[in-house]
Image 1 (cartoon, helix red, strand yellow):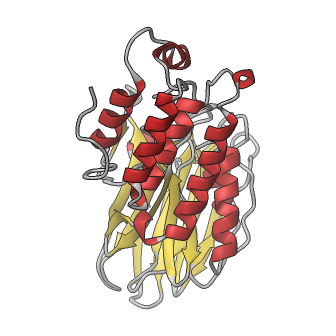
Image 2 (cartoon, helix red, strand yellow):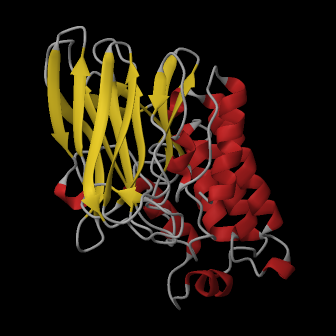
Length: 332
């Protein structure tokens, strides 16, 4: 989803849950998680820059666990939003178990700017969320979440999303992930969640800004991160309403229909998460019957002289885990 719409979604989530203050700053929506605190989440204040050849240290603590990121003297990372090197050594200390754990960021994170260092309360020791930013206009936020199964067990990677040299996301994550925005920790009711998007959508049905991501809400279960979007219908309905507004605005000839196909795809995905895929698909077919989704307009939006929108959308949604049993299995 666009950064503007992502901020709107976070606003309604903030209103709906018992949350903390967020401070925008560094690149990507994940920077909204910086400088935050609550009984469930604390995030360190990460500097936007440091002098060349000077090291720095970032610390914070939660529920008997403290985290310290110590970065040696090095050259600051040049990004459009500033940033400091993400190649420090992370030390976790627990007063509960009198243990010390040393962590290093995955090698694929090396050389990117540290943007977030957060502790998230769990039933055992707090989990650690770290994000770095590569400095690209539409990419990339790398995310790693370390979790412990008990107050005495070691930390393991529960979520890892980074980019390989080929630009492909990699890691053990089974949740949809958008590398432009990363994830933002939030508290909904009594549940700590990670708010993000699905990076499979941008560019698929048009330009980056023309193809927003549907909302994805995930949560830590033990040492696994699972998709819990369907458990939050209020937030999903709000996101779907924003997307439908984008669809309606894109029906005007003055807009060139550029955003129609991408916004409609993300809206349909949200509706399927809400188990309203059948009625959503009928709306899609109605727009097609009125000529809004013609091949000529679709080809102009995706910059390719081939394909038809309905079968492409149907195949894309089903392939990426949306709408099973709610929309046709195959569209001619």
